[in-house]
Amino acid sequence: MSHFAQVARVPGDPILGLLEAYRADRNPTKLDLGVGVYKDALGLTPIPRAVKLAEQRLLDSETSKSYIGGHGDALFGTLLSQLVLGADNPLLESRAGTTQTPGGTGALRLAADFIGHCLPGRGIWLSDPTWPIHESIFAEAGLRVGHYPYVGAANRLDVEAMIAVLSHLPQGDVVLLHACCHNPTGFDLSQDDWRRVLEVVKARELLPLIDFAYQGFGDGLEQDAWAVRLFAEALPELLVTSSCSKNFGLYRERTGALLVCTADAEKLQDVRSQLASIARNLWSTPPAHGAAVVATILADAQLRTQWRTELDGMRRRVASLRLGLVEALRPYGLAERFAHIGVQRGMFSYTGLSPSQVQRLREEYSVYLVGSGRANVAGLDAERLDQLAGAIARVCAD
Ligand SMILES: Cc1ncc(COP(=O)(O)O)c(C=O)c1O
Image 1 (cartoon, protein in one colour):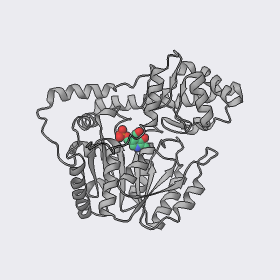
Image 2 (cartoon, protein in one colour; image 1 turned 180 degrees about the horizontal axis):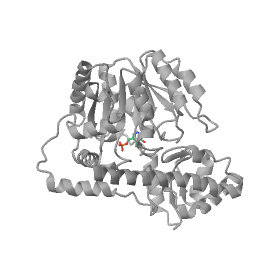
Image 3 (cartoon, helix red, strand yellow; image 1 turned 120 degrees about the horizontal axis):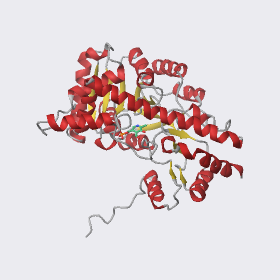
Image 4 (cartoon, helix red, strand yellow; image 1 turned 135 degrees about the vertical axis):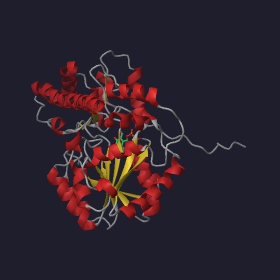
């Protein structure tokens, strides 16, 4: 008897399949706009200098590899919550706490299990579209998953439709919001839009879960935290998932946290006891290295300045590539049609290219985008924007 006879094969992650096709492509001018990692002008995903310096310090100073506690590195937790909520936020005194997790994905998984275990019957509402892993994480945790409109068929942010659906959600349900740099679309809410969403959240007594995976990649570290801080100030309870993968370049070190705000200090301890217990069954204790790197950087004025400069550089590169591509499309009469690429924020852009146009770009020009038309703008080559604009113009002409 084979124990595994009934085990069927599931399809792999389509974005990773795209990467394999890209690697096998021999065209020297090929362009990978698929996988969601930052790339520099050389097409590399660098380790920030601040990270390297912190790692050197840790190599000399680390004295033990014993477990860190269930909530992770305490200094990391304190400094990360300051980064998210603002250093002088009064909530930090007793109403907010972080639990360190393996990346932002771990934080989402912990949040999903917390909702499932401790808030039974609550559904979760995701933007349509959203990062595909949101769909599977919450479904796997057994939650009822629903969707609110976000970007419609015309490739435009549809706030009216979003508000209309949120206004009728079951009282007490959880709504997942992207703090900034919406993945996959790149369309972010304006401050006015956020205020309107907050009013609906209050009126329907919804619990917001804000996914904050790109702090510093949109308009700046502080600017990107604006909505999180607005919600934290206005509401007694909030969940925020934070990732250090992109802004610290720590992708494979799996560094993130679930931040919880509660109505009072007593309730914070109840919630944190549950989180530690759930995490114990998921990964026992979190990995130490990435969090130690982040804590070392944030606690040291010089390293912190170095990191902020590098993060600013990453953000500026993406912003200038966005505008550069729109300008490169101008001679083809397409600047208006693709103006949204300059308005969107973060690494991703819903370009508005159709699946067949995406396919032609891949087959005829070795330009690799996700089938939805999502492009990783950081993958663009500033020296070859004209070439890409020409290819886009040709696939749009037919
Ligand atoms: C919207 C969103 N949330 C969370 C994550 C989690 O990132 P990680 O688990 O690598 O920290 C990502 C990464 O791509 C993301 O795009």
